Amino acid sequence: MRRELGRSLLVTPYKTGCRITPALQTLLYSTSLALGHRRSFCLHSSPNATSHSDHSHKHIHFPELSCNPLNQGFSSQRSRVARFSSWTCLATQQPLARERTQTLKMAVTADPPRQKHKVTVIGSGNWGTTVAKLVAENTRGCPDLFEEEVQMWVYEEDVVIPSGSPHYDASVGDKPQKLTSIINKYHENVKYLPGIPLPTNIVANPSLLDAVKDSSILIFNLPHEFIGNICKQIKGHILPFARGISCIKGVTVTDDKIELICEYIGEELGIYCGALSGANIASEIANEMWCETTIAYNTPPCDRRDVNGAAAENGHVMAEHRDSRGKVIKTQLTALPHDYPPLDHGELHKLFSRPYFTVSMVSDVVGVSLGGALKNIVAIACGFVEGHGWNMTAKTAVMRRGMLEIIQFAREFFPETIQEKTFWEESAGWGDMIVSCTSARNWRYSKMAAERGVSVQEIERTELNGQKLQGISTSREVSSFLRARGVEDKYPLFKLVEGILDCKVNVEDIPSLFRK
Ligand SMILES: NC(=O)C1=CN([C@@H]2O[C@H](COP(=O)(O)OP(=O)(O)OC[C@H]3O[C@@H](n4cnc5c(N)ncnc54)[C@H](O)[C@@H]3O)[C@@H](O)[C@H]2O)C=CC1
Ligand SMILES: O=C(CO)COP(=O)(O)O
Image (cartoon, rainbow, N blue to C red; front, side, top):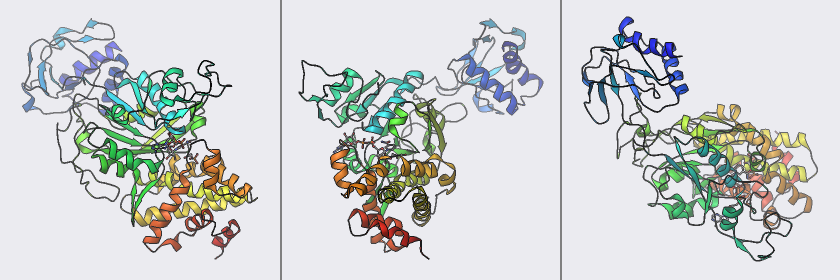
């Protein structure tokens, strides 16, 4: 390793005229990672370069090397040129041969980030708590990038711990206790994720403003009907350069307009927000049973770092960032300051991926968001079908039809950026459809409603202990949007589900959709 490092660094500028091949770049990069240090350097192609301005630049970025600089001449605070006369290999602490290093010139990029990303999860239901758990495991494991503590905003409730629970305290008895106090004391969300020990670095916080204060990463994870109120409350109280990930499955409909939840959040708060969605059953993931998910994130241009790791510009930048309709966004984004670690696909992958949670990073915000939102309508239809007594073959027909309507919806209302392959290739597409129609809550409880002959809303009230079925409101919202546009007949399955929810149509009418 040491010899390779020395040869790469020292021979390349002299003997090959700095032909830095991709293979060499990979070698340097992996070597630097193996060394595990954080410094950013940039190797100039010209060994005779005397200032940063005369670069014949072939930059190579190897962030984790160190050296002993003699004779430094810094041309600016953020991009400095130095003559390094001796190098020390960090792996061995041995100096490298001096005669071969004498005139090597290096440009030194900005200081390593001084800040770390602070993470807040807004929401603490079944999925909110599960995501807080996996994220908190990762912030603990990546102390260079993230503050260890993860704030979790909890919609405060009084909860009684049942006598059978290991957390039952006879001295408290049946007296209700604050859910936040219970979570912080026992490290368990006894109401929404019972039986799952949570990492101790999750802090349950009943104050929304306090929970989001100073956080550069906001993870939105609550039923979609509450997001409007949350945005109103935190607007102006978050870091201007905060970035969001929405784990919410739903859409925002106003009159005849439809918006992706992540874009609604971004517009309301003046930030950029991506979306996470996939075939994810919270209770399984909380039990660390493996599954996969999809994150759609289009790193704003103002957040992109150059090869040296330097931010494009500090402060306010009018970014050419495009939305799901292909339009330049109106929001003036504030760039992530340079003293923060970058926030791009790599860092988000580190934040969310676990051995039991495989993350695929994509750019198709429309496919990921619509796949997650609209499959809930199809899952309700499948619950009705099964509750009626039909089985897997009937459900498969409904799933197929549902997917066609989802794709048609994406094509009709988001034609500019939809990447249809998301529905076929990603967990957020067919994967989510299958799991939602065979084992998730929308399917399970609409099946129960059909079996008992009561409404799904009634079942939600009596059986879910505060959890929400997103398919009920999404069905209504999407149907009202389609009606306002006069196109509801083009989406017969969506229309029919709303009809069944309103007790105007019967499950037996479903097969009529398939008659030509
Ligand atoms: N549970 C799951 O397996 C998965 C859920 N999702 C999605 O995650 C999102 C969040 O769902 P869950 O965490 O499962 O929630 P949940 O349905 O388990 O719990 C409901 C949550 O809403 C909160 N709440 C009630 N009234 C509120 C109010 N007025 N304002 C704010 N919050 C209030 C409750 O405190 C609770 O945390 C949904 O969009 C869902 O579709 C996505 C993937 C998996
Ligand atoms: O989104 C989910 C599965 O991917 C969870 O769906 P439910 O809300 O129906 O449980």
